[in-house]
Image 1 (tube, rainbow, N blue to C red):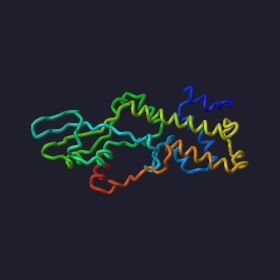
Image 2: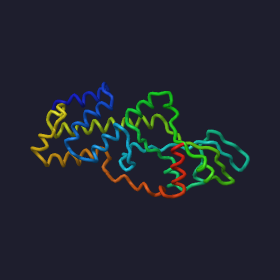
Image 3: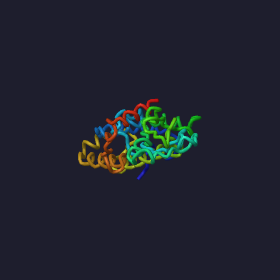
Image 4: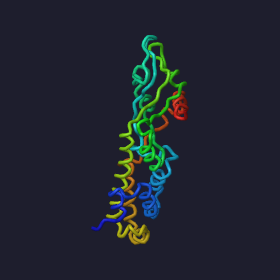
Length: 229
């Protein structure tokens, strides 16, 4: 089977992922599926609704900060031992960052001067709230390595390749950017393709999990303020 130019362009790296997504959006629009189009639009323009963010865009970082131990020793830019202050679930929520920006913005960040300074700030109010006499936190941020974000971009590229290959398997001449007539000729094909692409995007699960466990709590509110700082 001859490979499409779309597939050749993404594998060769000659085209930016944003351009591949735009061409793919035209094809996928014929499937008339909200979940798939939300994914394409999210990768292009950024995710507005947290429930649409795929698992590969949720990265876990390491908390670093300035803190005082037993009123004696001050640590600066050191890993904060949150395990003595918080339960495991709260630490996970604190240290995970959902990357909502479009893929071009993420690639620009990786190509910029700050690629090695990617971090999620934690508010001073939250640091003071969780501090105890034995461990007083003055400031804190959750750091992420550029390799983690590189992996995110690679994940998007890999999924695009899989989606394109699925389209090639099911339809002829996807380079025409029009599969509507073929869908109309065989309606069962549409359901199969939608199912397969949804599983490629969300890694076998559309259920993104319960995001409301700390959302309404005091700690959740403090965390939200910290993300805005």
